[in-house]
Image 1 (cartoon, rainbow, N blue to C red):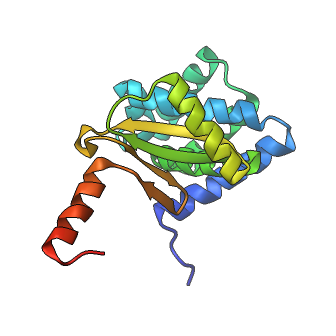
Image 2: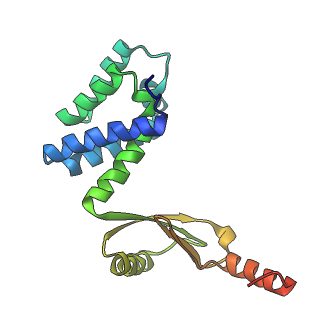
Length: 186
């Protein structure tokens, strides 16, 4: 009996196929932009999201709607074909998971390291550039910063690159100090 794939595994298979096709046609950068564009359209437009994910939309209407959108935003033939396959196989509902998997694979292919930074306050461009340059020197890769603000950190920031985490937040330092003062800590 064949093993049933979960959504994440299924999304990875589709993302891998799309990336391989894009690389084969030397169009990976453009396809990455198109994947992100469709994902943004889905998050910005409830109609586009419904077109892609709702079980109430039949495959014929979904195909016609996606063709109209593809024509309007001038998607490549690779992306049009890919969306057609998703529609044919009834898999458009996992497009967001495919996007996430595709971007991870694309960044790995391009040697880009995606780094999550959470800061207590908005980082100015100069600070972001210094952080990017420092991380680039450490990891010897191009860096893509994903910066978020969380005032609960009080000050400082946390940086996560893959499984590595650096926490230089005031909140964490205060928590450690509190543990030490209670006699439990370090």
